[in-house]
Length: 291
Image (cartoon, rainbow, N blue to C red; front, side, top):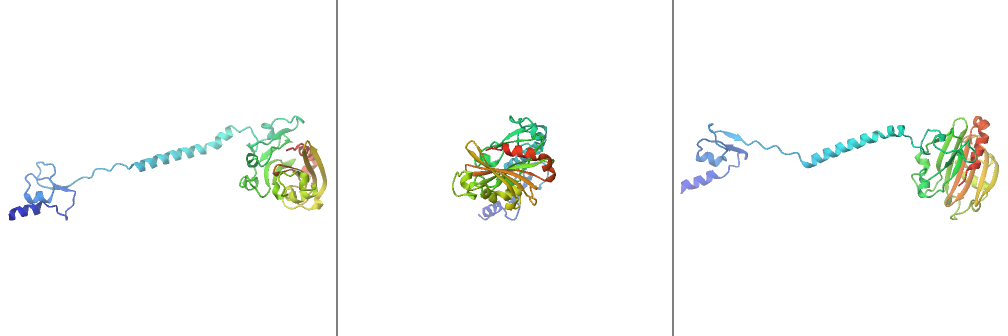
């Protein structure tokens, strides 16, 4: 009975020994069998060996993450090639920058020495939002469209902007520059869909929008001439200003009208040197502006 109890105690696992050890005895003793599990037998003497752990397979999440990183690298590589594609295939639209407008705009039906620009929803955020109705004007074919800074474009506030924004800009180093400025009607009157006459007189309107003509400040003494023009059902206010301290130039022409919930203002600017040779050109552009 005592011998049987001893065998049972020896057969219990020894917690002080590693669990991955085994014995490969030729003729194991009772004590050895109790202390270690039996490995495959061989002709070698009794020895204690450690089980070699099987290599763990690569976890699936790691492989998936590696594939995602590879795809991301390929995607970013493709994006880096887009500017090269744009250079090879410039878009024939007003969105093209630093290209003479005569390359992609059609000749003006009224005067072949100009080209015809008509804004569409693809041109500006306000047109896409429906806050501004399409406008049009003629422009010399050698002029170039310039980029409008995002903070000035109204892109950040559409469809509800509280302050005026710049729609489009064109310029020529020798002749001057033009831009279209849009102002929410609520800034000038509380009456929805008001006509320009309901907003006020030409002098009252330019007093509110003058800083957007000059680029800084407006002085009533700078206003040389005003004119009211009727084109169909649309009324326009026209202005001639001499602005020696303006950021836009010492000579400014402007034309404004109201349609929908927006007042649209066309501005043509030039410095003294440009004005001497381009006065007639700028006035022709101003006269052609319509909404």
